[in-house]
Image: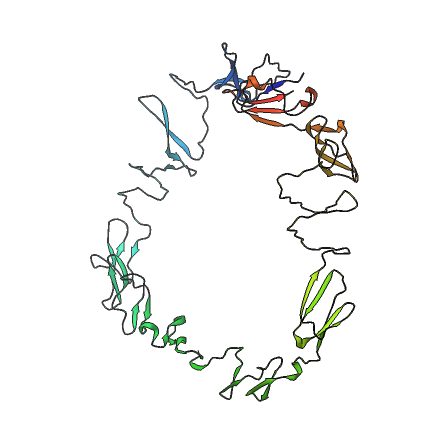
Amino acid sequence: MAVWRKILVSGSNAHVAAITASVTGTPTDKSEVIFRDPTTGRFFSTGSIFFTASNGNQLFLDKTGLTAFNISASGTPDEVSTDSQVLFRNPNSTGIEATSSLFLNSSDQLEFSSSQGAGVFSGSFTGDGSGLVGVQGTLAHALSSANGIVSTSGQPFSYNGTKAVTMTIMTASNGGLEFQGSALRLASTLAHQGLYFSGTGADNYSSMSIALTPGGTSGLTTGSDELAISSSIAGNGLAFSNGVIAVDLASNSGLVLTADELKLANGLPGDGLEYATPNSVLQVDPTFVVTSSARITFETGSTNLLLTVSPDSDLITSSHGFSQKLINNPVVSYDLNTTLTGDFTFQNNVFVEGNFTVSGSTTSASIETENLNVADQFVLVNSGSTGNDGGFVVQTGTSTGAFLFYDGLNERWGVSDKGESVLDTTHMITSSDHAALVTTTITDTSESVLIIQTPLFGTSGANRSGQLHITTVALPNESSVFIYA
């Protein structure tokens, strides 16, 4: 008999009458020991007691501490590995301590990694030497004097690292260089007669420029780091190039310069216009003028198109249309009949803003499309059938398909395999080839009330099985999932 049963999920309490294990295996590496509380009967484990399968199945006690009067090592390695730390013994606690700032490096040298290291050290040393003070030594290659370098004593400069010494840069009195604090820069008097420092900010001598008249009225420019006449010296209709001022003509202005004279271009006249006198008088070209005898004909080969013309004076009609004189400036209107005849093929999109009704001698309409977009929230099916079944079909063969459907007999939703019969007007689902969908109901009903409720779908216990209930008011550490089975 199907009833509501609680499903055990991770983190929830398990309530079972007994547990039977059909297969027990060998403990794996670091398998923890399981304990049973004698009062509650619950199981728990501790990571501090475990077996090690990789070490002879020994029982290990972790985090329990160790006190020993003496420790002896039966074997020590022949050499230490790279970055091995130095161990120290604390005389008060008799404990062994290590510091990562003192270790043996890959070159078998004792190395300090802490910048706070101090004391006496002999032997070779590697590192950046940061934090070392009071170190004296002799340079492998002594520093010697060079041009512009002097010592504070005035003697030729030399330095071998044995004592502190101060060196300075000597500048000539007229060298154009001066010191500002401890920094060397160009002298402020360097700029003169049309030159000035143009660096950003006060006392910035990083860039020098030529001084020009404010507002650009000098007619000069320093573009491309060269002094030249400014292009702005030319005014409206004038152009300046390579030191020459000339009349500036637009490419389509209709004007040209011939022998230093300005005149209309030969190509100025267009359709229907010509020169009566060379480049001085324009007149109408009669070869392009519409005459009273010129007519235009409008025809259509479809009865779905309606053609009308206004005005209709001098109108000549034919079986497919009409003709009208151009001199009357005819206006032709095209319109569609309200009823269209014939077959039509639309190769691009068709938008219907009003209602779209399909009627015919049959009760079916075929729509072939790659993507179907329906703006309505719900799609109504089975509106014209007498049965209580309905759904969607995915065609899998010539006359077969897979169904997602509502089973009216059992009052449940279901799915089928891919081999169900698919016909033009009727479909059939074999009861042995489909399964009911698992439905889930979210409820705030307590467990005591939930387990006596009737499932939402199905007509009997046989076809109600498999439905899920999830309660939002489960007690702490209790599962909130129930299945009707």
